[in-house]
Image (tube, rainbow, N blue to C red; front, side, top):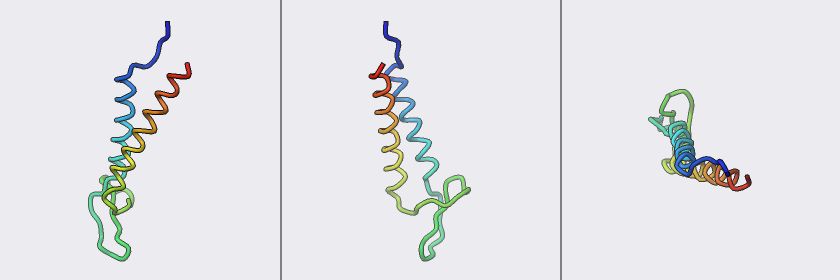
Amino acid sequence: MKQGTSTMAKVAIAVGAGIVVLLLLFRSGGVDSQPPVCSSIFNWYSVPCEGWLAPAAAMTTAAIVGLTLWWMDRRK
């Protein structure tokens, strides 16, 4: 009998990876200089000031992790 990772576990792992990327790239504030400098939600490092980048990177990461898990389970 084939023993694999459940679909719900794969979805949870992919969504979790997306949330981690979203938190790491989410901006909390910035300085309106030329070019503008934005700080991360944890205030440890600079992140891009574009508002679309963090959600786009999070969705892309979740999709890549989900497809990779699906592909690895399918190869077994």
